[in-house]
Each structure stands twice: as C-alpha cells, then as structure tokens.
Amino acid sequence: MMEDNIIETPQYIEDKRKRRKRKQRIQLGVFLSIVALVTLILLYMFTDISYVSKVSVNHTTLNSEQDILKKANITKSDRIYGINTGDIANNIEYLDGVKSVEIKRHFPNKVSIHVDEYKVMGLIPDGSEFHPVLENGQILHQKDFKASGEAPLINNFGKKELNKLIKVLNETKTPIVNQISEINFIPNEQASSRIQFFMKDGLEVIGDLRTISDKLDYYPSMAKNIERDENGKIIKPGIIDLEIGAVFIPYESKKAETRRMEMESEMKVKEEKEKQKVEQAVKDLQNQLNDIKKKKRQNKTIEISL
Image (cartoon, rainbow, N blue to C red):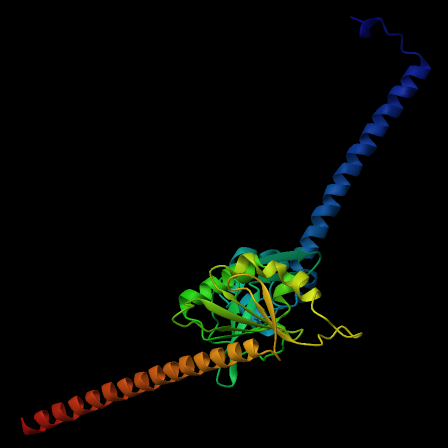
C-alpha cells in the first residue's frame, strides 16, 4: 500500500537505477571472484606448483634424517594435497625410540616433519659398542652410540634393577642427571641394592637404589660445601655416602680406601660371574649345535642303509 503512494520523481528514479546498477556490479564481482578462485585452484592442482618441492625434518638424536625421510617416502612426484599425513606419521613411529610424529603441509608445496624421540638416559657398553637406554626403559640393541659424555655409562644392571634406575633418573632434576658420568650396580650380601655414581665434578656418590631417588636432589648443596680452588675444582675429591645418612669421605682417608677396595673387589667378582655365564651360554649353544649335527649324520646313515 505504501509503495502505491510513492511518487516517482526524477530523483527517485535515478537513485533506484543506481541501486540496481550497484547490485549488478556486486553480483558480477562475486561471480568473477568465484571463477578466478576456481581457476586458481585448478591451476594449483594440475600444474607443477602443487608437487612437493621440499621436505624438512627437525634435528633428532636416535634416527638420522635419511632414515626418517625413507620411512616418510614422500617424493617430488607427490602432490602436497594428496599425501596422507596420518599414514606417514604411523610409518615413522615404527622407527626405534620415536615417541610421536607431527606432519604439516606448508603452502604452496612444502612439508615439515617433527619427530619427538624418547630421551637417552644412559649408554650400556657392549665391547666396543654403546647401546642407548631410553627414558621408557627400552634398550636399543641395534643402535651403536659413540660415548660422548652427555649420557652416563651404565654397568652391571639386570633388567629389574635397570627399570628402577630409569625411574630414579626420570624423577631426578635434569641438571643433576647431566652431572653423572657413570653408574654402577655393585650389590653385596650386606647391601643388595648398592649403587655407585661417578660425577663429572670428580666426586663419587654411593647409595641404595631403593632410596637414592629421595636423596640425589640434595647433591648440589652437599657438593657446594666441599672445598674447591679458585677455578671451582674440588681440592680433595672423595665419596658422598648416601646409603644410610649423608657423609663425605675424602679419598685420602683410610675409610675411603677401604670402601674403594671393597667395591672394586665386588665389581670384579660380579664381572667374573657375568663372564662365566656368557662362556657357559656359548658352550651350551655349541653343544646343542653339535647334537643337531650328530642327529643329522645319524639320520643320513639310516637313510643310506635303507
């Protein structure tokens, strides 16, 4: 009803025409934008621009960039929108020591791979090789690390004791763990869980594997009270005994010498027992092989006689 009463003056007609023209221009702009966008998408999808040009990998300790790229299996013939990031991540997670993997696409044609690995808590010597022990307790027997001093050497631990040690190291503050150069398990009849730490500052720590976790965090304050020279080097190295209480025993004392001889003797006995076990295992294996060969010869003799 209101529209019927509008008087179409020349000004009204001109404004109406402009509004219509503006609307048409907007519609045309939207249409052309859609056409341009579709054209760009098609050009991107079906020209060389969308082929993967570069795959980057973050720095890792346990696995080389080459091994990770091999598992990823992304080639320059792959289009970036066609790669399956989930499958690639799953493939890489099969590598030793990998905790998690994140794959990201970067427009227009780059891919980044971020691999998070389990931390190396120590190295187990095996002849001339060093096998890493990870924060989850896994030992990578197929990996040979060079002893760099960053991770402590771990000696004479059984599987059960090693798992306890890893738990202790995980619960201990990182700066303290970084100060450890070597860890030995040296139990005897009186101390079935005795553990020995050699620290990079020249001190030695003796404790009980079952209780050492509660005491290691006090090491910095205890070590700080030991006399040092102007360069910060300990003047009289010795043993911090944490088995029962917390006592510092200088190496030059008779008590430290007795302790040292006692522990060295225990380590030699333990090493000798381990050596005998290995020799016996080799001998048993050789006997089994000889029995198999003997049975094969007997079977051949029976077949020939038949």
